[in-house]
Image 1 (cartoon, rainbow, N blue to C red):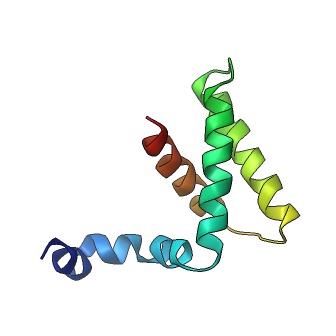
Image 2 (cartoon, rainbow, N blue to C red):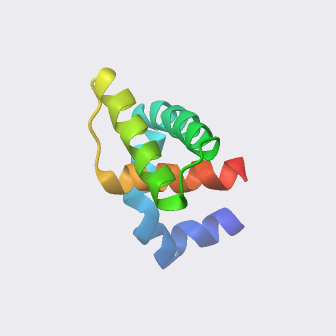
Length: 87
């Protein structure tokens, strides 16, 4: 029932572009890169802003090596999801 409510809600329309990217073949690659980057950043002595920038750069480099280019907003979403999972 909650899934149906979500799909029918305004929140679905808001998140739909991100969800579609995450559900594509890029999604698993992005999430693996994000988990690796966030874990590395968390283990560093950097402050929070530096950790975010460090993780972002690692993800961009990882994806570029695999021939994938995506928007910064999707990378930031992946970072947030990885941070939530690591906590």
